[in-house]
Length: 175
Image 1 (cartoon, rainbow, N blue to C red):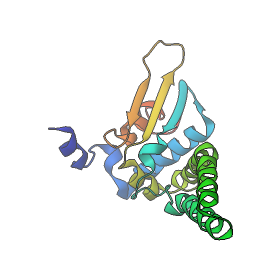
Image 2: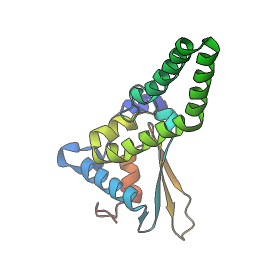
Image 3: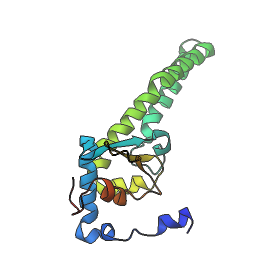
């Protein structure tokens, strides 16, 4: 089965049954492990590719964050033009644009990251919706046994299976 069709197939096994709350338990274990960073047997890390997650369907990307900068550039240009001349307006626009390039992008990315940790990691439905987009990578580094790092990336990776394999003990409870 090709990777695109594989995403459409619902996961099978004990972790696929949302009715019993298994998925919610897995999400709680993932959230606790991300918050702690360290779990018995290894270290979990989360990486966000904010360029990939800056998407119209992303729950952490807010268009108004970028629009503020565009409005600032336009206001500076118009004010400079009417107060002095077109060169002043162009200079003011260039100044605001350079401030955006130096500080604005980082500010937008910090806000996206804060939204992820504040809302997505507390709501399983928001997490599942965001997991359908590219840009989230879970990785688990095993302690001292020399086992290779395990990586799970959205959207093709199964985060539920990743949590079962690396964050839960054999009885289905968090390590």
